[in-house]
Image (cartoon, rainbow, N blue to C red):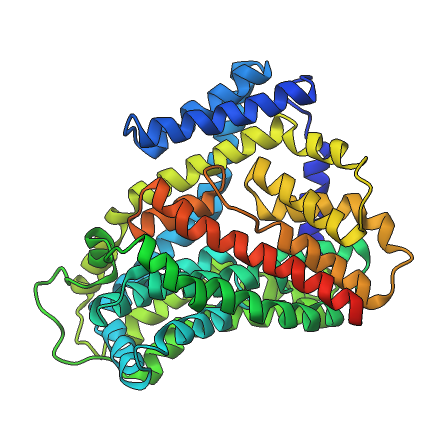
Length: 470
């Protein structure tokens, strides 16, 4: 897992922007978050601008040189857009091809025909869990969004009733189940057994996904009863740009195969990483390329032009027009997600994560609960589940030396559960969900943020419960 080791070394090498004490850093974090929330909710300022201003406030209150703060923000924005932004763009293209060709209609019609209204949220969490097993959360969102939006539209569901289960399925996989980067990093740090961690992770993930998904979505749909946003429906193909729906549609099998192609490619990479685990091996190096999210999604886009476009009778010009029209609606999403990454990087570079680690060294409680609380604190402060997982794992790793195999695995899962706690304005994922689902900040907090918190709490309860019996 060399890429994770490099990431950890880079994080350790970061020089804080300021030498401010813990109290001043804490005030800086609270001030920055408060400014962002007030600017968006009260002043109705665009989230992109609010995040920039909030980052400057954090730096100013923490006493950091503003030129360094600007550099830190720009670095975080660039890194986020270079990674997540490319995936969002490719996912939007794939979603538009899927929808304009009639493929999304085919999937939606089939799902609606085979799953009743009461079963639909359960079907969505199952689909999301399967798709989310080998891939990043952000990739899962861009793959599922067209299906979620159209199921909500065609089935006349509240968007939260089907959207929350899909998000829960993806998020549980991201935080608790290897081969996602966070859990893999924690497994490596505490020297846990990967197979045992995976098995126990599934045991904890199932009730977490059920409670935070189909069950919680009943209440989320009452609190935030919204329809799919028109701009995203347009991007998903509810209103094809050519002015007409294709007379022929691709079959259900080929459509599903096209959507799952990037999932299969990334899953293959994950399996090779686990089986081979040698960065010098030529097979692993090939799959490191083939199974990378960008290559997997790019391949799916190219394949979709044939498997979806040809059955629908698309000409080359029509395919080009579909690709071009898919990118416009996501411009705002890209900027907001990028700015969220910039704000997160400003917090990390200011030393907030290190502050949490130093404070938590003096906590005298159960190791599993301590690991969860440390991850929660870093998650709340920095917004990054991966940073929270790696940092917390590094801190509690020495405590795992005398643990049994099962308890070391549970330590990994406690960290993963804590890393998902209450996503808010310093998390790029928060802004992705907000923009894709057309919600305001308050609505996103009442749905997405509470869903994440439920997963985290159910996760640690499951960990503590299993620790008594295994």
